[in-house]
Length: 360
Image (cartoon, rainbow, N blue to C red; front, side, top):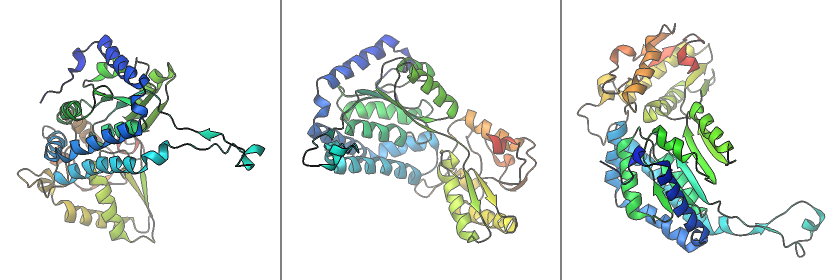
């Protein structure tokens, strides 16, 4: 599938033209109208309701797995639209400044207010692990606030990126919203433009690049970056419940999200029993590696999905192939299939603290 924007072939001048057109719309005051914003938000909801199967199919094609994960992601976007519509007029209303000085104690005399105002043209840099949510939630919030928006979906999820370009062009006003598809050169060219706000979700390394580019403005940024997330299990825990919850959290999107349970710190008094509980929970919920892989499976029932591409699958596999010093309780490198982007759910007990499993 091919999107309406043509990727890296568009010159920086072309991106500047897009920016100028959106900025002209913003300067016209059109987006400040609350009724206009509500209408655009409702069209966004229509875009997902009327094309639900197309969105679901695109996510499955890019990330594998079943319908549950795709439907869940689409649901978060629709919920965001409904929330913005419900609260839009209250959020946009004047409110007392409450500056804390003596005149603030005289409400009948203090007429100073804070008046929320849109910023202008904003840039949304989407990412691949939740390619619908992390492109559209910032877009929805930006439109609700009265901004014009440029969205660059991740090139690593090409079906979702192409569908985003096609449907945004069909449903949303082009004078206020544009989709630009492409890879690193496209993002680099966009970051040279004088956006009034930038949102980015992804790695810390790329986050630094975005922040450095924004500093030339200076342009405010909203960055959501990855990290290492510990989960604590002490001797007082319900070990079965803890294991069930950790397996669900870790296997959501095959572990490819920034707030997943990255590693477990467990009380030594219960670590062996907890390890058994984790293995039991994983086998009960996911089955063996063949079941997790889901070849020929009913997508309505499948949960575990694939790594986004071969490069990332190879990187994850390399963490298991190194001499990490731990005991593999479940899964492992032998059952992986890089060509199919499949890495089985794997549990490693007590890897070395300096191993890549605990440092990347």
